[in-house]
Length: 496
Image 1: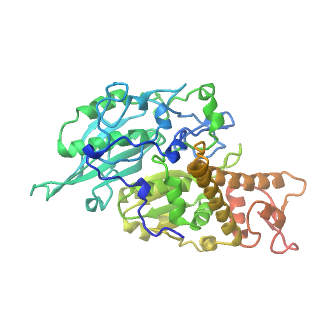
Image 2: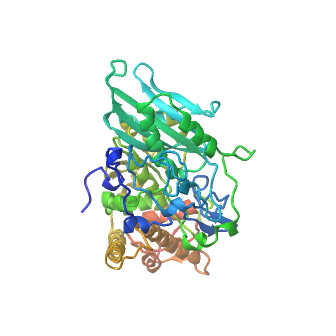
Image 3: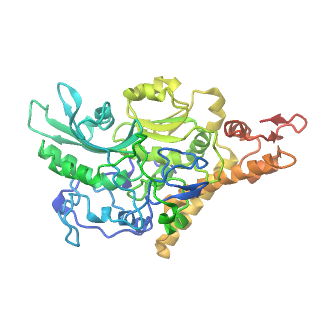
């Protein structure tokens, strides 16, 4: 049964007054997420841990990455008004919502990642505008619209992931009623940051939540943000390409062996993948094929957009492949997260992406996307892709296996107290193994004396020889795999 609501309860903020908040004991699920945010895997030439610069496993580049102790203690988004204590349990002085534990390192840690901090406000006469930022000479053009989604005036709070050039941003938005005719009864602000990588932005979510409430209640008091920037500001290489210096492979140690995912995870709190599966149901198998074919996927949803940004991330996870050398020729499959009309020119040149928007006008701009998702309705205007919208028996069998594995995991967590695994790992590895099986088979057939792909090969890949023929033809063309398809008519093989 597919969940019909567009809300994701586990990811919603709780509007609880600070005085009522108490430290919650970690649940088995969150304890099981002990390495959320740590995932990295070996490739040819090194270790990859960040798809923000390169989404293909076959193209290794610098690793940005890994974990502080904070990754072992993920927090549920408590929303504005969360823990604002000035000291942690060891008596260390901290920023509100940002503990010293977040800054500790185990072996090696990605650090000095923040390239800008900013406050955006809504002015009744001028609209969205940047109120304050550090450094003052940073180019933040358009950030005032990226960090305050269209339609946000109808909600009380939100969080937004977005892209700005070669950087990624996270902003927390809040809307507070005020008795002011000048502000028309509402004060709206966003506090955000920019970083070369999106993978560790979640670390600062709680801090940003607290700061946006602080800015609403005490406008113009920027000293906590100034101190935060001085502590976290990035020292980028002279090349100016936005990449952060890599850590040596040896420094990653057991983390590499423990986590073989092709990208790091941003899903704090736990429950992102679970919500994604429950929301889309069997349609996940349709999204999986579009993701593997590197199509341009656009998700529409009214605010709040934070949950939808997580759906963007989940879509990217569907296309993971960990076979060295596979996918060198395919476009990068990168998350754009939230977009608005100011991003139209940037999208015109993108060959492959996943993004979300609150602006309905994008539906009319069909030249910008291949697949459009409105709530749970997945559609495409491209005739060649129409057959991929129909689920076949192999799709349903894969989805059944995924649900079966989830139930076994949930059972082991509840009955056996198994905290070593979590749904996010299961989800990512399920699709990675499926993708690896497909490409491993295709590579073996292409390298054999008789490069002919039979119906038996297709079934062994978990696909339907008849219904998935068009999908396979597109896959072979996009990935440049040279095999003969003999399925429909053995007398007249098609060469791909």
